[in-house]
Length: 339
Image (cartoon, rainbow, N blue to C red; front, side, top):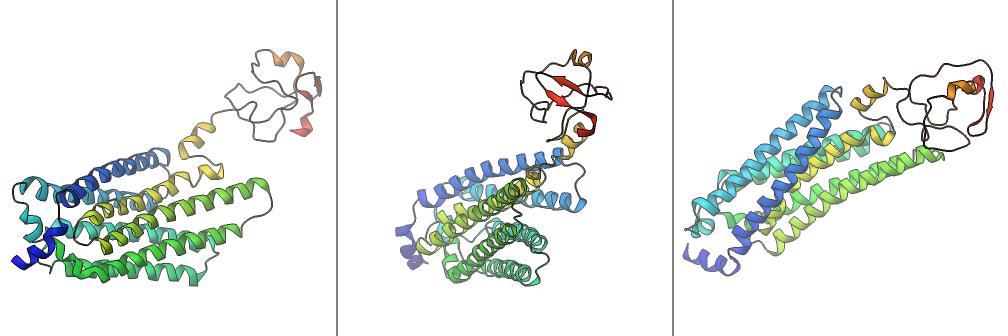
């Protein structure tokens, strides 16, 4: 045991152990708060969404809440309960929360990756090979994480996790590869949906940006964890970075749910419900024909030669239609048949 202390002690300081745990816990709290705001937005704006999506969201919320509690327990155990006994971190056995937190993070990541694999399935016109590859990599990465968990319970102390460096690196590496393949596949199949029309191509470009951003962020954090785990295995900085990984997966999934209708111009459930009770002209339509007396009370701050949704996108009383056309110096000609 004394030899183990001599081997580990030169690389161990309060800053790169308890300090790393504290910083990781603090950042994880902030990221968890962002996740809660995303979930609140989803539940309030999409109350009529599919039940399967709601169940996945509630499952992710439950797992991430437990995950955050485990992170807090880890820091409390080493930083508060054993504040005056720093050798507990070096010589003491790992806490159960230390190991289970890594497991929960892997489970959340697998759930999100499966959900994104189903997106690839839809956008690829049910391409079995690419979707199957993503599913195999996802389940393979989760299996490796579970093996890592089982072996971690057999380790005598925290820093003995270096003995599982190869297994941990492969597990995280498979996760990075899965993210890259998923994002690349989405970009490829989305790009094939371009039609040459500006509106639809703009939608495709937006979806591609979301696919790249969601995959890039989680990949960067995973790669950072792998690098720190391999070059600095005798401290806990890589653990502090790993604390936020599963939450970033959850946020990327929630961001997809919250924006999937808005970026298509369909709005949320709440917006659609409100729109059903308003008199709003669709983009590109003309104003119904009316007589000059019907213009009384029509207040607008815009001056234009044609009427579009951008010019009259506000709630107004329904205006009765006349059967005759009219010539107005501000709005120009309008006929009932053109509406």
